[in-house]
Length: 125
Image (cartoon, rainbow, N blue to C red; front, side, top):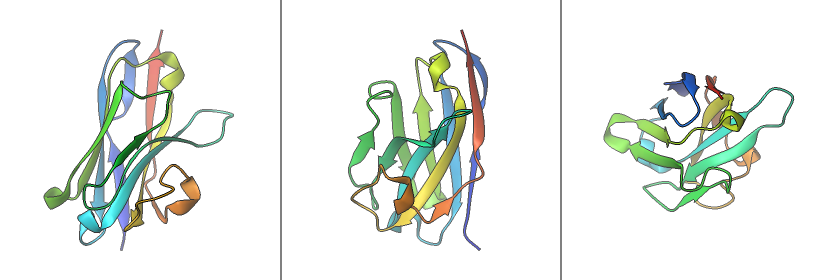
């Protein structure tokens, strides 16, 4: 059974850092593009970052560029989102997602078939 499980969320102050993890049971993890999305209360889910399959190109939302870094550890079936210089507007539930051999349109949530349950990130001012 395919599963994505996020962890690493929490309550931090503005300027702090967090690293989110996404543990995947997808078979050969390198065959999957990985994306991170977030959803704040009362808002639509929005794209944060993505990485193409087999260590392909990375993509970032303008709002996180220079602060967040997406990475992956294929042998251990894990993806990561390093978040630095956090701001209150980063507060949201963060989701990881996976798409088999995805390399284009990775900022579009509808492209992803597999989703985790989400982890809450709260940034206080």
